[in-house]
Image 1: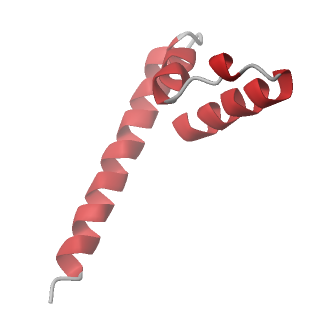
Image 2 (image 1 turned 90 degrees about the horizontal axis):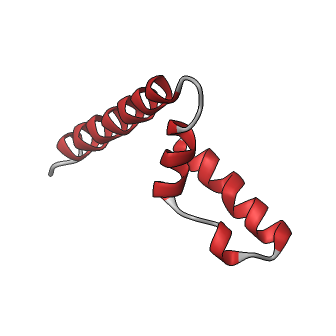
Image 3 (image 1 turned 90 degrees about the vertical axis):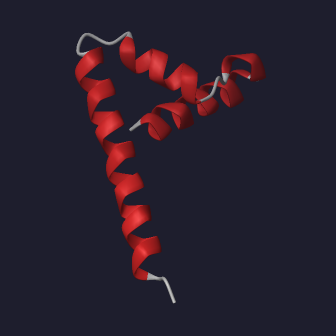
Length: 65
């Protein structure tokens, strides 16, 4: 979700020809936090990052030779 927001910010910056407006992951998280349910959205994003980290750790453990 955070990367989708970041992609939208990049797209808007490209459409407006303003690279300073693009932002990065921090701008995407700030945009999510500014929403009415911002805390809940940030919690979902954080759980997604944790789940991806657990997946990467499990895959690395499974691929040990």
